[in-house]
Length: 160
Picture 1: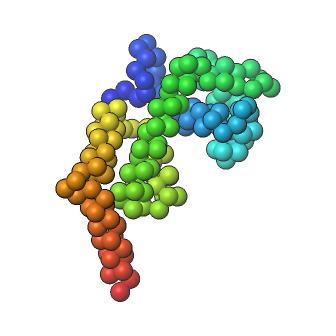
Picture 2 (picture 1 turned 90 degrees about the vertical axis):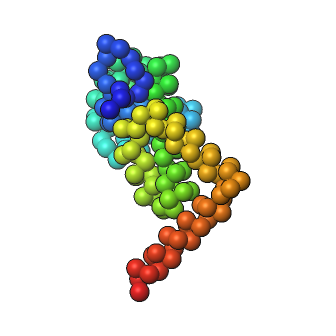
């Protein structure tokens, strides 16, 4: 398996939990002007001391700028990683919902699990495939629509 995002030599790879925190901080910073510990705790469904503990780890690794009882910001390195994890999540979720016709809630959960292990190469190839299948004049949206109809008919046959 390729190194997790991005490849910083001489550093331990980020854990999936660290990546989740960076993605949530990235997302919250886009939604709100200020990111607070309680916002992260609410989004993750964890207690504030748990968040504070992880923020110290991320701060020590130079991924965020944080001091206890203050607001926090992503560093350039943290922003880069948060943006990439968010991109992975969106691509995977869109593939699951738009192509495989999986409902949005399940797609979101599955994308969150998958985003941590997929390599840059595979994600880029998936993006190219999605572009191809959506733009291809030979199949295009009719192929995607036909797959959706196939899934619906399969569900109906399972119910009988």
